[in-house]
Image (cartoon, rainbow, N blue to C red; front, side, top):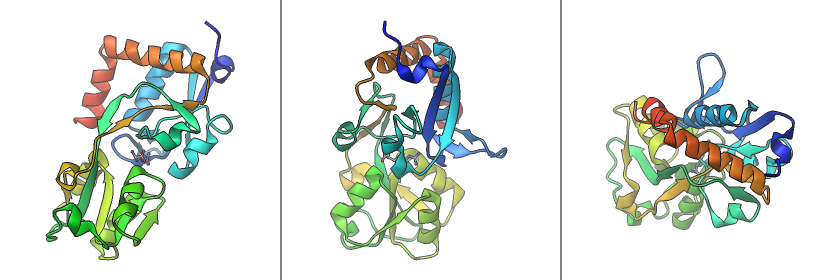
Length: 229
Ligand code: ARG
């Protein structure tokens, strides 16, 4: 098969935004770690290339593919809008948006979200959903800052993906609660790796590597280690 330009130099540069535990976060040594990082390193091993991580703003990832980075792994939801600029690997994880509110809040339905001040991470699907309910969307570069502002009363609600919501619920224990998105009618989303448009050789290589990691048990092990731990 034709080789992808992105792999030709033996280095796969993976863009992420390490503000999204457990999929990506900065560890105690200042390195980006998390499920997506471990998955990409395992993909790199299968493909025999070195993996370099570029930590950047989430909202810059899609436009950086093909220049600063080869691919992006960032708990990124497949959307039609993003598909106009990038291709996606086969989906590797199912997600849904959750609602975080203060522990004593009685917000419980989609109606309750109307005209509230909603904190989100800039450029995420949570951001796009929030804009359907209110014109008071507070956009943050780091999701944790949105949750901090929820705790100190500057926003009423944070909309963010399920797994980070559960991590933040634990981190801010007793102060906030995470509510299932189904209760608000939010639809399921799928995470995939974003790839340069039209690079079918790279897409085949990445999908093939993930298939192998699923078949040999590595993928499930990473899910257990990072997501279900
Ligand atoms: N799944 C959401 C989206 O695609 C949020 C992803 C945020 N990821 C991150 N690494 N900060 O918009």
